[in-house]
Image (tube, rainbow, N blue to C red):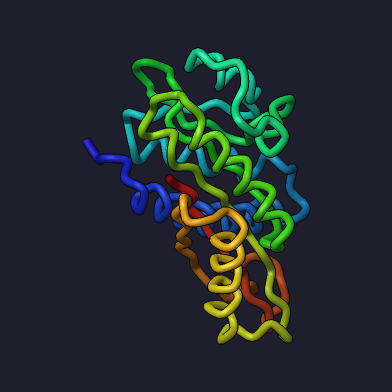
Length: 204
């Protein structure tokens, strides 16, 4: 049975999004930006559960339900956790149904959006739930890079985002990213554009 390690989870997400974006355009004639918000979420969980038989999933799971599953009512920072909201995806143990990781899916990697989601994941990771797995969460993003955002600047862009998150979250957090930079034309965009698919890992 394939072990759901951090790197394998990230790579499975990257590969699944590339395939699904291409297939979606070929079958529907529209780009992923014209698809429903949940399109990428479903793509991610289907691929992960197929690759890792030990995993199940929940979509749009309430934050309070995740906390309750570990005997918690609140955390040290319910504002950053956005305790009244929902996580896009929760990966769960198929056997025990306990939450292992949470994943937020975005169509942007702006500093503001990344920090908002990273704070949420970090707050959950550092809560007193006693779960080693729950100390790691993920942020998935798909961004279209226009001609002015040359592909050679991709590494620079991601390095800046990593540095920004590390600065804002402090030394207690480990932030990493794996990504793919693809020609955008097969996905319905201009031939001079690129698609940047990124999977950030936030862990303690």
